[in-house]
Length: 134
Image 1 (cartoon, rainbow, N blue to C red):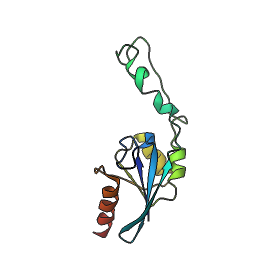
Image 2: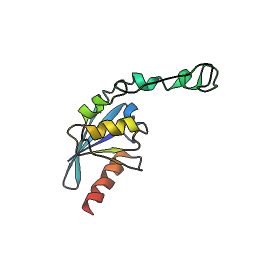
Image 3: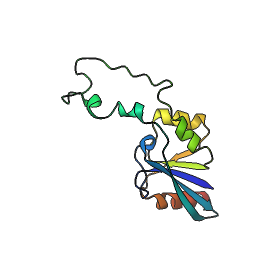
């Protein structure tokens, strides 16, 4: 079984799945973790970056109502195709949170995912294995 988790530090789960630095891929045979490898997240973050920093708060911290309206359209531009491609062979993608765009892309790509509450990557995988046993 192959289980993937988004991470920024190779120790804990990333809180922002699509913006994670990389993915940890845990190989599980029976009830044991037999290996782990890491891959850089290939998702292009250019669309997400617009909602961070000065653009989000406005130049003087007044929020989005700072003199003009913003219209951001996500059709096509906000795609997680790279993530779906990276995860196409996983049996389960364990996530802390998943936004509506990521959720629809994962579902469209038939990538199974489950929300988890733990922080530590190894604990998350072990708990998931235990949940399968019973």
